Length: 106
Image (cartoon, rainbow, N blue to C red; front, side, top):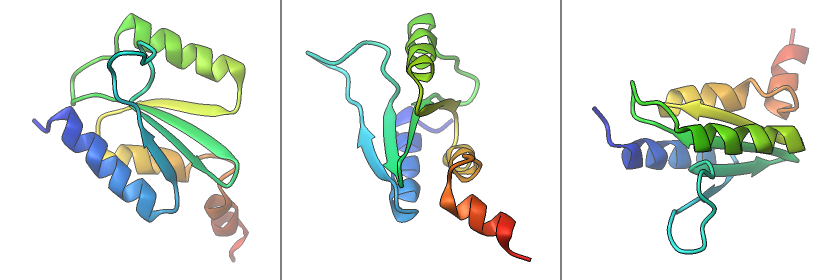
């Protein structure tokens, strides 16, 4: 089973290659408990990923923070277990200009 840190690194690499600004949230002194692992921005779109190993579940606190971020609006949050799952989620965001371009193409 891949380590969570490997999944985070793979998502970071792929997202940056697709033009996303990626911030890896590291826990520790002063960090907000429950904050998703990755925060991403591109073209006015904000996304956040809580990364888990396959079969692992987010904590109640992590789900609570995700819910709060979504409630404030403007942040698309998702729990993911693979880089491909994360990239598919980013590709499917409704405001993603790449999606509009694909839909407008004949």
